[in-house]
Amino acid sequence: MKQWLNTRFRQVNALGFVAETTGVIAGFLIGRIDDWESVPPVIEPRRIGIIDAVYVSENFRRQGIGSQLIGRAVETMRGAKAVAVETVYDAWNDASAQAWHRAGFAPWMVHAYRML
View (cartoon, rainbow, N blue to C red):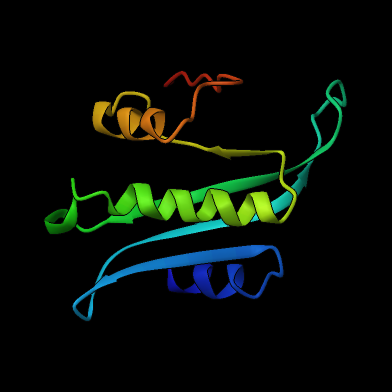
């Protein structure tokens, strides 16, 4: 993870936020802003924000920290002229799905998965 973070934050399109309370890290968000195009190219290219990861420590959950991190990222991405923000979350995790839906996210393209 440390190596991935070092590589990610050297990229000019990367962004990250840390939530801190009384000197303790309560959570973080890692994202980026990028130009997206579909493969094959059937949808017009567009500038989008991508939220790669959001994490809130267990003892700080259900206090709105995740929502604040997501809100801050969305506003930053809007300011960078992104037209949409995307993320990936575990569809079977009800708490995660509800949190993303509360933040205004809804399925767009479904990425299906089959175990072999």
